[in-house]
Image 1: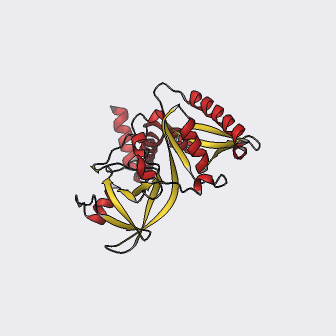
Image 2 (image 1 turned 120 degrees about the vertical axis):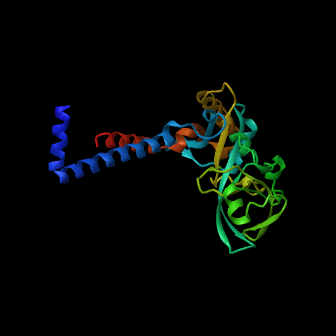
Image 3 (image 1 turned 45 degrees about the vertical axis):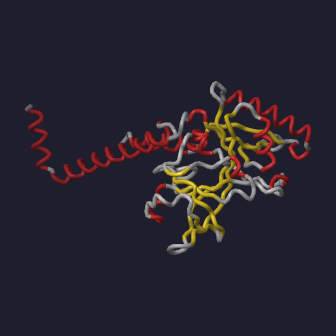
Length: 277
């Protein structure tokens, strides 16, 4: 107790040093807390989807130049979907911009076009309305849209009668079929609407345009290694029957690892660094 009183008196005699020490300690604790929270969210906590450990991405690879994780052409995705048995389903995604017009000012809305089964693969259901139907990824039947909960509240005032109404995206009419749950951040945090991805006949013949990312869900009991083995066999079979596929393969990767990516090392280094503060 005497030592504690002595230390306290010494701190009172040096208020400048005391203030710096307290500030340094506070900054250190704050930095540790912030970095740990971020690491916990990104690295430790599972993805916010049903059985996220079974979610994967599938890429094109090229043996000649040891090129990995390449985007996929529409015909390739189509063949993978037909021939694979390791997955409950595969879904493709294209990158598109949307301009919402009509009531209010024109607004650029971040959105994505996906195969109709994407939310069934993720295990997410709309809170209002319905999900995409399989036939809505057919060319000419794809003018339907799912809204994010945030866009529904902000732009449409949370109108529960929005389902069945039409909105204008890129000067074309889309029927609103549903509203997704709050905080449905996929594939990016700012995504605010989703429409079906429908390939045109021309796109299904275009082997040169690798414009799509492919997501999948492994069947229960199927490992990543087993899926990669099967996709390797499929790639060889495709190469034997069509010269467009010669020299190419397929690579199946964990969605968790892809989304974390190179940030894992950076975040762990940051966590270690602030530990010395």
